[in-house]
Length: 330
Image (cartoon, rainbow, N blue to C red; front, side):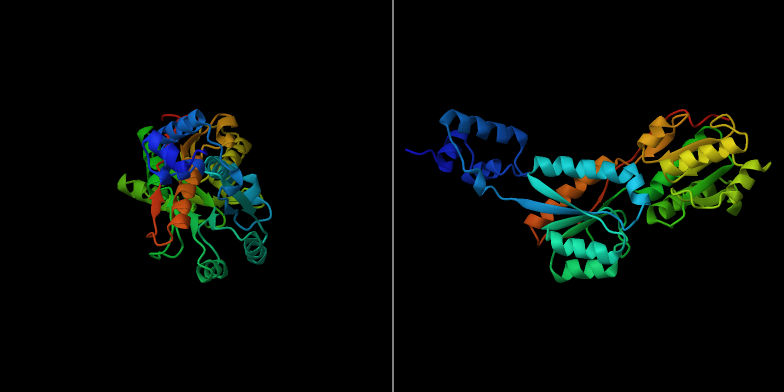
């Protein structure tokens, strides 16, 4: 007589639905319960038809870009977290890229995934309209541009991260602290600048406009203003830099004016990427845990795929300051 799911459930002391979910490796079943059910399956010699397993697809949408996005390991770390959890839960991935909104929208239509993870928050209105019109669940990594009650997101508290970065420099005795942001006015960089401003103001230090500049990872900017500041007598003794890539560029500019990190100028940056670890000296950086951002995005989008009536969720992933040699006490 053939062994059934009900037989497995009875011997394992669980419900038939738990056995079914174990077979499908569903995220809602604990690893301990899965192990117990699988042990009973092996004991009874139960063989299931894998062709009956449900397959699901999630699309991962990269920001529109020709170059910069693909040079930044931050996005690859997020995708690593997404891939890890999708593999664990038997979800397949489709990567969506494009140089403009039209290309991305076309790729999304072709992919026909059950849900999408956007690696950025400033989604074009045409894309959001398409998702809403077709009732496709999606989640953004970052702060939603529109503070809608229907926004599903996972993010870092970038205001607090910028604040803590400055406080760390202040704890090392620095009073003249500059800020280097992103040339494209990304929301994360703006939020980190807000945190920078709050910490500087709270400490009672003057907020100098000439201490605040922007960079581009493509190195297509003109560094003249930053070089002039670095050569000036009133040069900051430290900078908060909004991304590890920009911190590496700052190290080069500081070296160009005959100064050194951290002997003359200290740096603290963000993301804890390979750039921070391989820089000379290694960079003190705020680790926003991109791997965890990716995994949390999968957890949330899967819940909303399987339960469309769920309320929108906004999850904040904690950050950590990784202390290395690029900050010196003064």
